[in-house]
Image 1: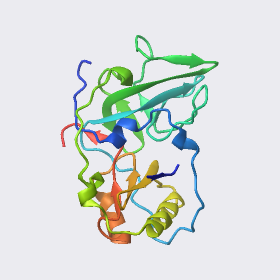
Image 2: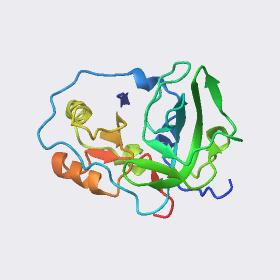
Image 3: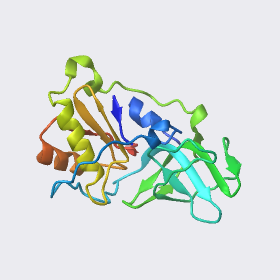
Length: 215
């Protein structure tokens, strides 16, 4: 695999990828040689979710700045380093798993809320990831019998292309089982359709960081 880069809380299926999103990982420091972006290889930006969504990640706040919901890789430093969309309605008071170093406060949480395309708004009490047990499902495209047909070289080239495709880039991507998996904050299907039209079907597979609570 090649990587770049309680109450009201409802359970929804998650793949192994979504369970790992936002957890401190060394993948934040991995990189690769870049390839110039191809014109038109940029997916739609700022897709809002029609209903409530659920995400797992690191919430981080530096000083008096607004807290951010890190849904991608997090640098393994102390304090950690990451960035993400603003998270409104966040309150550290009474939460488990809160850590502070200097003027940085952070913790890993499963959070339910709304997504307007740029900002996440909390609607239910967050749950500390250490205690969160989501229902997991098997991702069929990660099973050996469903391997993709695209060559490793082609997938690497596309991976580099997406990493330089303007403002809308995947939070992270990795090559596995003959596919390029790409994590975007949210997708209602538009990003997947765009990538299919650009690179062909069953080449780049979108795995959103925010999942619909009631799909």
